[in-house]
Image (cartoon, rainbow, N blue to C red; front, side, top):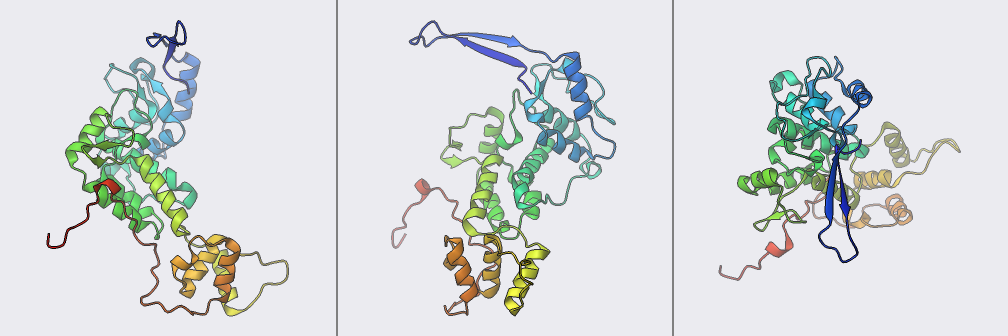
Amino acid sequence: MYPLIKTEYVYEDDSDDRPQVITKEVPFTATDLAKLKKDFARAAKESETEYVWRVSLSGGDGILLSEKEAEGYWGPGVFLTTGDRRAPWSLTQRAAYWAGGLNPLERGDPLAITGTVDQLVESVQKAACLQMMYDRELKPHQGSPMMMPVDPERMTPLIRGLPDSLKPIGIQLQGRIQKTPDGERFMATLEGKMSPDHRQLGRKVWTWGEIAQELINSGRKYGPIGGLSQRTENRIVQRLSGRQLPPGKERPLTRQGLWQLGLQKGIPWDLMDRLPTQKLEQLVQNWSGQRAVSKPTPSAPPLIDLEEEPAREKKVAGN
């Protein structure tokens, strides 16, 4: 996966601020193209959506092809040419452009993007691919879909597939992004002229990569973000009932298991937050409901405040 065009900067000396720029086109050889077609051809059993996901998740963002290189048959009913010869497009863009022209009901779009905690970033990238398909996005040298500004309408399949404790965070993020005027998101998508912190006209323009990072950070801060396995549930039931497994058979609960057991016992999440694992285990084992709680402990963490600090203003009494 090397770039189609290599760029070299030639400096006369250390003080030279106007280097000579040399670009060289490095086309794929016939052997390279044959291997790409073998690796990235659509299988007959794959839906168009699944095909775009596989191309993107297996490196298609980093493979740039010219129209001439992309000519030909790449799988059942798939022609990856776009008819636009102005610039090379990534393999992911080509697949998304092709799939975007079909009826969504026949394309096999998912009702939910699901996955384990380890697959959280993958699920976000799949949602970004769906947006690229709907928008038929063709932008010269477009990087990963993760760098695209988020269309909040395309977050719904991702939110459906999030763990229960992260769904409120996803919904709040979606609402926050919806407050950004469509014109700002549109200009960010077309021009890509955003400052380093992705702001335009005082408002933040979220990218899919930032959505993934926010969800990961929230999961780390507020505790376990995945459901319990059957084995972990069995250990929790045995501890609550006082029954022990035979010696050598019981494993200590993980931090995630301790959190879930604590929540089931009614321990407020703020008491467990940031405790070392050893102290957390002691708290969970010895908890008998000593602390009075005015309201039921929520099963999900409280919503995080996504408002930007500079935008906050103190209200004056009477206004």
